[in-house]
Length: 171
Ligand code: FES
Image (cartoon, rainbow, N blue to C red; front, side):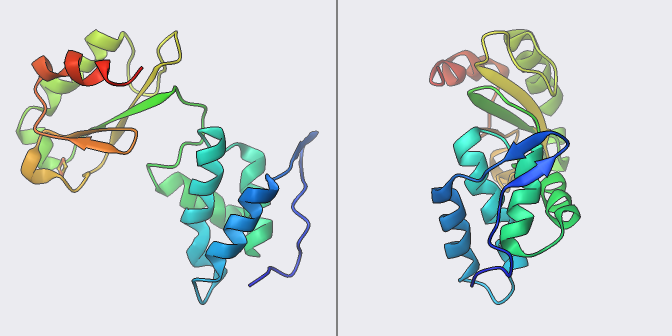
């Protein structure tokens, strides 16, 4: 289903953001799977993120235009969903679960070891652009707590001693 307004060039201040035509087509295709285009919002944001590694400001309004919903609604989804990044990130994103099962089974030691090994804290990216470190709510891997996710890969239970070998796989 096409939105009423097919134009997706969006002015944000002086910035112009054009969705890649392939991305726009993929979003329109995704919309066809749902009764309301709003339901395709997360997938649309993932499509943009796959291309840029994050979701730039201008993309929010461009996605909203394609979906036919308000940019505030898209921004709300992007902000709520922790796997959508609204700031530039490194080549690999390390998400550390801090929910209850992980908190009780060694999250703090794991976090401290990551901070020490990477030399960055939450929300920061290593100087070489290799890793960004972020907290995340339950990854759904509680039986393997403490757990973390690197890019789309979930690991657990992870001990501080496992980190060097684990991170080595992500150049
Ligand atoms: S609480 Fe950490 S994966 Fe569920």
